[in-house]
Image (tube, rainbow, N blue to C red; front, side):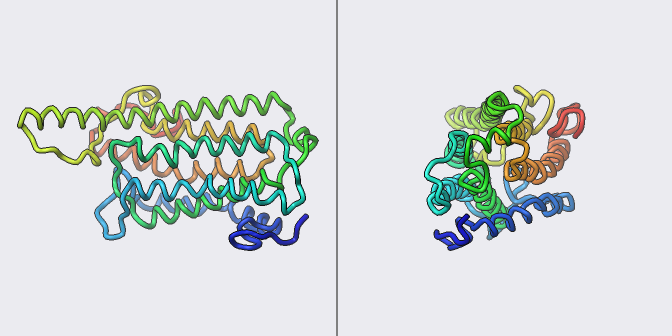
Length: 295
């Protein structure tokens, strides 16, 4: 095992095995940091963003904070094996790296340009998300690139359910990915309808065009019938499938899922209260925030 690594930041990016273990040991504690969100109702992005000189344009901020995740994974996954004298990695490693890139090709690159509008984002939110993506991409890329399974026998030991477990995990991942896109698009449709409505009224000379970046409704399609943040729920499902395919002993995949839940759950719970305050209990009805029967 190499005791040093060469790269953009020698020994750290990509990390040595010692530094990988150190960062991963700290990464497990991210939920404690994310729990600080329960102490405040402020979140400087989306529906709760406020005017500030530290705001960044929504699309630019989203693209630049989300892209480092898959770029870091690709960089680490490709640069580590030669330094660890690993000429070939198992096909499962490549498949899992590809799934991560597929998700973020949508989430980081396509998503901001599919949105009819995006509210400004506070610099602090951008910085924390940027850091999350770099660390998460580094941990998963390092595990896939040499610090996790490097032979078929390693995979046999890692997956008690064998190829069936891997296949089921990937199937769950794709179900979550498709559902994530569907519910994202339902939120986009709300803005598209408002844009069309304003186009019609402007053409009729009744109103001047208004910014739809802050136009909201209570969504109703799909799982929105039962909860207000199904796009969070199905993204967690997606990464649970990924963890299943990687094996429940894959600590980086487990951390990714747990860290996502820890960072997104407070926003969903606060978000439900925002909907109630804006639209009233009657219009929100008995919808859950994000986990039916629990929250």
